[in-house]
Amino acid sequence: MAQIPTGTDCSGELTRKQIGDAWEQKARRWLEGKGLRFIAANVRMRGGEIDLIMRDGTVTVFIEVRYRRSAFYGGAAATVSRSKQHKLLQTARWWLAHQNGSFDTVDCRFDVVACDGSHIEWLQNAFGE
Image (cartoon, rainbow, N blue to C red):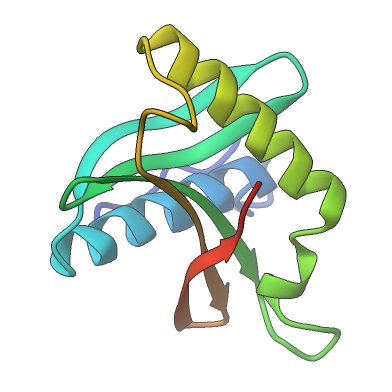
């Protein structure tokens, strides 16, 4: 993995965004190793963002990547709240509409890639409409 540039501060610490971006890249490569094909990253609309959109065979997969330094205060997967799920569903609905599709016409699922420390867990079909 390429070295990630540090922020503009003098501490040499990575920003939360840089850490999140690095884990999203790591998750993408890990999923590609599992046979998924990349479609898009960081798809944004007002009120929501989808980290990764990939294809698993004929299924379009909307993926939320969550990272926690440790699972001590609850794992990364536990941070995907009902509110976050709703935002992901709305963003996916919007993206599909812009692709001339919908939940009725496109086979979709929502996955979570939870990264706790260096451990990666792939939760397929983690939630739905």
